[in-house]
Image 1 (cartoon, rainbow, N blue to C red):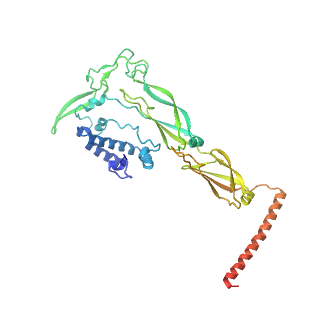
Image 2: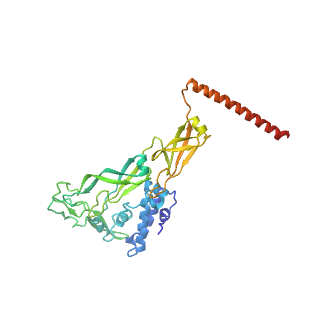
Image 3: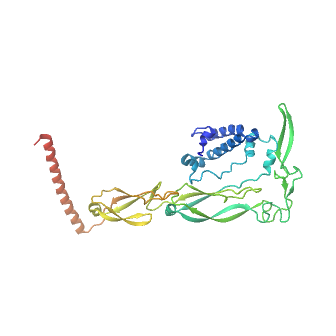
Length: 374
């Protein structure tokens, strides 16, 4: 089923400012939040749709990619992998610490998805054209193997916080002219965890995670270009409390080539030829992505002529078709000539001058006939 336009979902113009997007999002999120629409699956679905649109459009980078590529994204895999957060976290944005049932308590102990990682990768022109495999090193936070993510010393476990009794928060009521409200704040003793580590793990010092350098193999698809992104699911940082890991986003930059220039899937280059080759026609050597190849230029080729070599350009992403190679020929004028070469050129110029004079005379008499009928 075709996805609905993100701008249409939020009800904003395509030129909307960041503040306008935020304002529209806040209004819609309040309206469709599941806690305000209990038991309404349509409201929950609408709420998730609003969050997806907001997270893409509020980020200038992903918004630019969406404007250019649509829902498919630059890699054709969409905009998945963003941490939209739980619906209770978004609810907090609007209602602060005012208590609404047990949603905040559930949120304290809920699994948390790991952070995403960005990696910038430079590749050569040829690697982008034909694809390649790269091995990169990524520094990321992983679950501590010693304590298995509990933060406690091996053989021990975190204990329930005696202050908040494991809820992670302290509640107190307040009566106002509008009624009685229950206010909630994070527990100062356990910092919202609900548990306390009495004997920290020696390897991670109770932090539950350690930093590691990992080697990751990446398949670079043929036809990729600068600015496109390769997404590796689950290769980001570790989650918390059993949450899934984040993703790794590899941003590709293609280094310029000494000979070729790329426009989309087409490739352009310039080749020098001699005057004799241009005048008489010749078989010349032309550079291509596969190496040198022979190409015959016709007699009387003019300076700046561009020849098109079909299917010799960049392969299309996820397709068997290719762009074209455009070769522009430039006549190279020799800087140093022998006396014999100079004499031959003088003779050629003399013959050319006589030929031009004859053509000019013929042209003049043709004009006379047209003018006077004689």
